[in-house]
Structures are given as structure tokens and as C-alpha cells.
Length: 467
Image 1 (cartoon, rainbow, N blue to C red):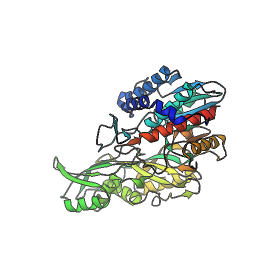
Image 2: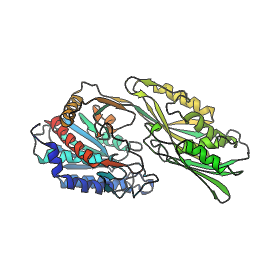
Image 3: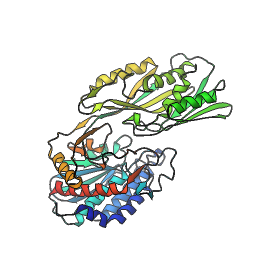
Image 4: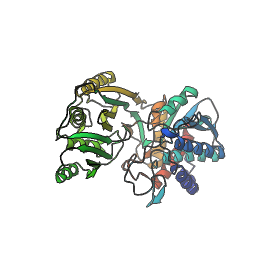
């Protein structure tokens, strides 16, 4: 395959690539329960993105199939073996603080800015154009290549669960939804909830927590928190100083006779919470200085005593590490409290491949009970690991080294990609080593040059895997 200049082929199609990437990014493909129908089980916006890709593929000569709105695929080639490229079209909510409309993609200073630019619509289009290049070059294909388009990766993975109940499992494949060179192992992902037991006795106090709200998804570090409180006036300077020292932005106002405390933090992907600033934890740590009724106090103390300065689960009693995937991490991504209704927490736990997860769950249950909270398991995606000598890894290492001139080292992550849906799947780009991780953050972007480089790598990889 070395006689083909893959980057040259990519650059021939650059304008079309960018235009269609922008069109896809401009679709607000966030899970929307209010617009769910039988044809759109994840909501209108996500269905629109799926339809866009399937129509594009059909126009370009790929075989397309919509699998009940949960997922779809685009296929080319023939043969018994199937190579899968697993992408997702859903994105996390935009969040606050963007400098422009997150669903009106813009190109500035060599970057393309929009929600989903790097996670995962930009990389999806890169993989699509890679397939298109191989197809248009008329290269010999002795296997089938199938791009599988998921719609619920950022939430509960109902898309791939439904898809593989009805469709064939690829022999091997990759997901363009993480880092280069190659991610061959992924931590397990345990999404959990703690619900307050209101049967325990409550009391009155000088301060009353009317409501507390922070976070939208368990896999995002919350960048906003708001508490409404009745009681004596807080010292504004003390509040501002406390929150600022934690790297967040504070604000106090009044609303209907109540004090309203708000905090702005920094959102990042929940797989590594320490890279962000959790607004909910910051706000709770300030409120923890003041006495409140027992339900509110238990809510606040649960946050502060278990999560402030601790993303490794030490205070919860579940800290663990192994030589393959490193430390267990835990992110508290949802914190909700209402007077009379009590509190709820949503967390995501990323655990190493050798973790005894049943023991972890037992410990979390006990830890929650200490504060009057009941543990609930939402979803457990087991760890994923492909042997280093697998032909898939050998091929992708060869391609990456030929394209970049750099060693294709093997990596592990705490994030979860669709690669774990495959018996033999790895995550393969698009983020190059040393580049900032901006997925799930405000003003998310992808470097256009890097997307084009990734497209060339994917094109050669596809050609090598199917020859």
C-alpha cells in the first residue's frame, strides 16, 4: 500500500470533507426524551444525524441500513469476514459558557469549533472519508467493511446493545473515538446512583437548603452549581474567597427572599475528574461550614467528605490500581437536592481490568448507608483488553508508524469507547499525543490538520485490514 499517497488523496477531498463535517456538527444530536418516537428512540436531533449519515452513504454508493433508529451502518466490500468501524453520532449537552453557538460550527485559526467536533462527529467523518477513499480508488477488498453508527454512546449504550441483538458481530475493528497510537485496554465503567432515605428523622435549623443542583451527566465534571437557601445572610467576601481558592467563579444574588449561590467550574470528561473543576463540590464545601437540617447536612457532607480532593475513591473505601490500566477513578457528575424530596447523586466509576467489582459495589453500598443514602447500580460495562500480539494491533501499529514515523505505543484509558463492544476491538485516534483533551468541554474543537492526518491513517488501515 506504500505506493499510494494517502494524504494526497485526503487533500483532494478536503473541501467536501469540511463542508459535510460542518453540516453534521450543526445537527443538535443530544438525547432528548421529549421528542422520542418509535422511529427516533433517542429523540429528534440524534435521529436527524443518523439519517444524515445514512443518506450520505447511500449517495456515495455504500449499502446502508437503519436498525430501528437505534443505530445504522454503511457497508462496502464482500467476503465472510467483517471489519467494523464503530462511531457515534450523539453528543453530550453543550453546557454553559461557550463563546459561540455550539451547534453552529465555525472554522477559526485552523480549528473547527462545535459540540462533537472531536467527540465524535469529526472523527466519524474522518473514518467515513477513509472508507470513501478506499472505495473510490477501487482497491481489492477481500472482506466487508462496515461503519456502525451508534446513537447513545454518551448515555446508556442502548444503541449497540440493540444493534448487536440483530446484526452480525465484526471479526475485528476499531473505534475512532479516543487517542493515537492505539488503545488496547479500557477500564470498566460502573455508573451508579445514591438516593437519600427520607425515612430517617429530620429537624429544623438556622439555615435551610431549599434546593441544590449541579451536573447533567455522570460522565461530565459539572461546570455549574446553584443552591437556594433561606437563613442569615452569608458573608459575600468569604464566599467569593472560598470558591475562588478552589479555582471556580462565585456569585451571590437574591430571589424571592432567598439567597442564591452559584458557582462556575470547568467541565471535562468524567474519566479523569482532576483535570476539571467540579462546581458542585466547590459549592458544597462552602455550605459544609454551616449547620443545616439533617437531610441537607447529610447531602452536603456526603459530597465533601467523599469527593473533595479525592477522585480515586479513597474516602469511599474503593481505591484500587493495577499495572494494566492504572488507578480506579470516580466522578460525581450529578448532585440534586430538593427540600421535602431529598437528595440524589449520580457517579461514574472507571475501574481497572483486574478489579473485583462485586467487592467494590458492596463497599459503595455500605459507604452510602453511612450517610443515609441507598446505592443503585445503573450500568456496568466490563473492562476490555485485546492481547498485544493480535493481528489487528499488529496491523494498526504498522500503519501508524508508516504514516507518522513515530512508535505506535499501546495505551490504556479510563474512558469507554465502542471498541469494547467488539470481541476484538481497539480505540484508534483521532487525538494525537500531546494534544489537549477538549471533549465534553465548552468551546470543544478539533484541529483540521489532525482530522485530515487521521483520515489518511484510517484509509491505509482499512486498506491493510481488508486486503
